[in-house]
Length: 139
Image (cartoon, one colour):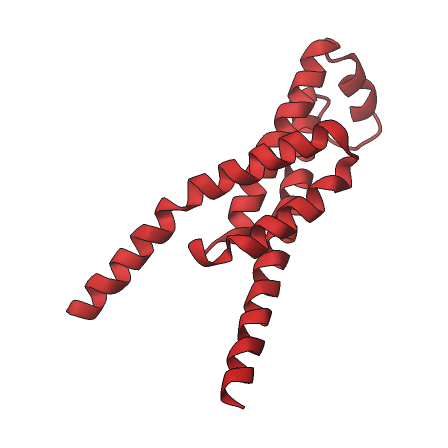
């Protein structure tokens, strides 16, 4: 009974760190997107995944959600600024319904996948480093 209480406290602690991690990724990627090309988010997400991997059990979801919001927000803002002219021209190239919201959704999903995979890569790299440190201690 005591063990389940400890594991529930750990789960609660991990959930508590989920939204701050999303906000850190979103803020850092928003800032880097203003001054760098689209791929500038990759090292940012990788580093954040590397540094914060112990505080959350879902690095992919945190990276996905942060970048989905950033890229969908950027594309929505651009769409509003040019009165959907650009998105209507681009959407004609793809076999999807001719709505600018579909293009915004696709853009957000692509950004989210990029951010999620980069954050998960950083998390996985940290776990690899920790396993090597543990192996060095015992051998």
